[in-house]
Amino acid sequence: MLDYLGCRRDTRIDFATAARSTSLPASLKQVQLDFINDIDASLQEQNKQLPNLVGSMASDPFSSSLRLLSYSLSRMDLHVVADKSLFWPSGDDFPPSWPNLEFLTVLFHICSPSGEWYFQGPEDEDDDDDDDDVSDQIAEDDPYPPFEDDIEEKEEWCYRDGVDTPEPEDTFRVVPREEQLVPFLEAFAQAAASMPRLLEAWLWAPMRFHPSDWEEYDGDTMDQYSENICGWGLKYDAPGADVPGACSTEGMTLTTARRIKWRVGSWRPDANLHQSFRSIGENYYGPHLEETWHDTGQAVTLPRRDWFEYGECILL
Image 1: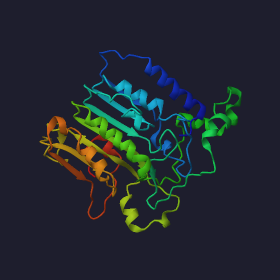
Image 2: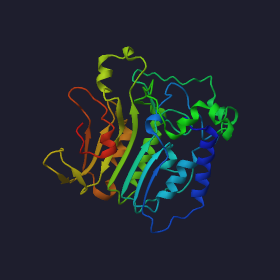
Image 3: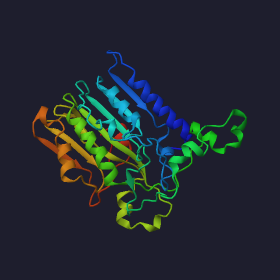
Image 4: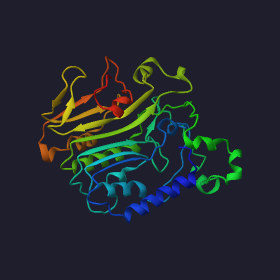
């Protein structure tokens, strides 16, 4: 998240403009797009507000341009800083249709393009500095890289290539901020319910729990987030999809019902949001749905990140 702010703003707008004026070839069915160069580096600076890259616009044009690109695809894998328009249009736009999408994976950053965090600390800590309007930094505070003869004077320049990435010093955002995250989740559920061929979908955010002051947290909190390189999210499987067994000799099994595997710690969706997720695939496969939650002993924990990165056949 430390890229020069002017460059980040300009490239997002330019990409959106190009995407809206581009028609993908019919032969292109799968895309894999990574807009987060270094995940762990991007998770730093969690104790401050991040810049608003959307400005006065109602939604993020970059996010909505990716949605437009997805309509003709059968598989889409994204690593992205996005808002809800990634999944569902705003305003009075016609409901979108994904007639071909079968596999969808979205790794989303824990901060939205508007600079609002999707997550906070487990003790309700949320250290945004409201007196510091960081959105103004794009125009006023060194928004673009220096000329070549000034590079040596910019100590952070070498960081752009991911060289010597420092360890996060205060990464604590592992609990949803309902006001910001629920609309994003609701848009995903609406979109997934409108994908008649959807077989598998992952929606998740990478996290690190490495607070600067460990002593402020009690034992129960530490038990929940003991896997400090973790992930928060869920997976949907349609009936008949191949899924791993219990990482043993069971091998692959066929689902006989729709499945949602929630890996969200102790958080639970409210009734309306839960129903939206339970509707995914219902019109195409019927009402039978199995849901599981990640419980380890008596603690409700977040899984290691590799469960999301490398698939289900990972011991939790």
